[in-house]
Length: 312
Image 1 (cartoon, one colour):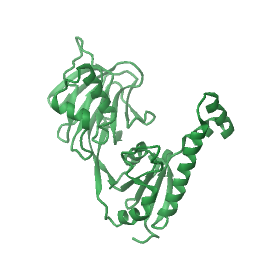
Image 2 (cartoon, one colour; image 1 turned 45 degrees about the vertical axis):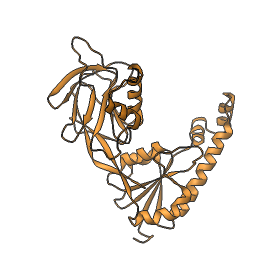
Image 3 (cartoon, one colour; image 1 turned 90 degrees about the horizontal axis):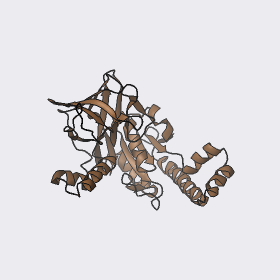
């Protein structure tokens, strides 16, 4: 495909400085606020400058290989990515995960670290300087791809939500979630702080922190396979998800046996909400993008048919 026809989407985000200016209207007022709290405003300015330089350089480099569309993070959920588009994400790991979540196809995604001195970037193996050699190879299909398994929550009214890292099913506020959980021929009624369902990509995040807490309570005496999960997570392309229930409470009417395990294509997880008006399902830590999960609603948690592809 020639450069006139190749579509490239460059996904960017607002810097902390830009967010502050939106909040306080001017850079001077933002500076006053930050310095009044005793923080170093020059750090915000340096981060902003480095990021904008990275965006400009990346856009100019990518423009040699196709038609570039710059896309701000805030428009991801409504943007229709062309099936043949190459997607380049310039940001932190969370921006890569957010982008994968909204891709309807399996477009290849290049994660680029705009500021290696500041960000570690597990999902950002490349720097802006790599794009000149990397982009034509990715367009030609000459780069290997890491496949990323995704999760899906489907409600009985037809709504659905995908996750790249994890799904949270539980209460909107700090109260107990009430629901019936069922997998295969096992079923229980729970009162808990909610469930986390993790993909392989997300298994070293929120899911791992829950296992670390359990290990601390048990004095690190976790069973071998669970200990391995806590230390290493599991493969990004695994053909299963892992779920764990947070703080399950045993009582006369609630049980605590079906609180940890795998979700496979043949063994999805089903939950029936018993929450009057405060149940939610959200993914990848984005609480603003949620499904209501209230009394009588059934949620089916399964592996998604779609998947992500990260360029190596």
